[in-house]
Image (cartoon, rainbow, N blue to C red; front, side, top):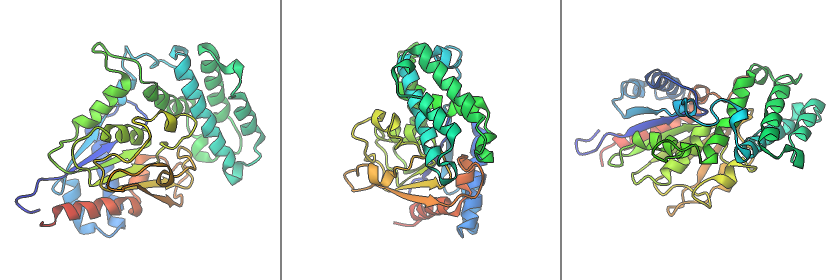
Length: 325
C-alpha cells in the first residue's frame, strides 16, 4: 500500500440476531472468506486478509439488542403488538409462497393449507390472533413432510427467529431510555464500525443487508464495494415497502454493489435486487449473481463467503485500494 494512502476497512454485518462473540465471529467469517479467496485464485493474498494487513476488519454485532431484558417482543409472539404481528405474519406467508414456487413443492397440500391459514383474512387481525397464527404456522411448517433436510433441521425457535426479527426491526419501535428505537440502535452499531475518513468494503448477510442498506444511506464516507448475501430486501409483502428512505435506492456512498443469492436460499425472494433498486447519482445498481446450491441449507453467511464468486470482488477491490495512485 502506498505511503500516502489510508488503510481500508472491511466490515461484516450479520443476519438474524442472536447474542454472539464478535471476535470469534470475525475470525470465522475471515476464515470463510479466505477459503473463498483461495478458490478464486488469491492464495497469495490470504495472509494479508486474515492478519488485517490489507484492511482493518470489524464485525458489526447487534444480536444482543434483540435479547435485552427490557426489549419488548424479545420473549416471543405473545409480546407483539398488532403492527408487529402483521409484519411478521406477512413475512411468514411470503416465505411459504417461496417454498410453493419451488418445483419440488409445487402442489404440496400441506404447504398450501399453511399458506391459506396465514391469511390474509379478518380473523388473523389483532394482537392475539396474529401471534397465534404465526406460532401455529411455524409449528406446522416445521412438521411438513417432503421439505428438504436443511429446512426440516431448523428448530421451531429458529424458524420463528427468521420471520420475527426482521419484523421487529422494521416495526421501528421498542425505544430505549434515551428514546432510540430498536432499528436506530441496530444501525448505530454498524455505523460505529465505520470510519468516514477511510474507504470501506461492507459485507452484509440476510437481515444485515437491510440494516446495512439503511445505515449506508446516511453514511458520509466512501464504500468502494457493498456485498449482500442471501438478502431479503425485495420481499414485496413487508420488507420492500417498509425500507427507508423511499424510494429504495443504492446509497450515495456505494461505488459498486455485488449481490449474491443461492438458488436454494429460501430467504431470498425471486424478485432480483438489480431490477428493483433505483441507482444512485453515479448510476450504481446491484449486480445480482444467482449461484447453484452447494449445500442443503445454503443461507449461512460462512457458506456464502466460502464461494469463489463472493470472495473474488472483495479481493479484487482490496487489491485496487492497495495499488499506488
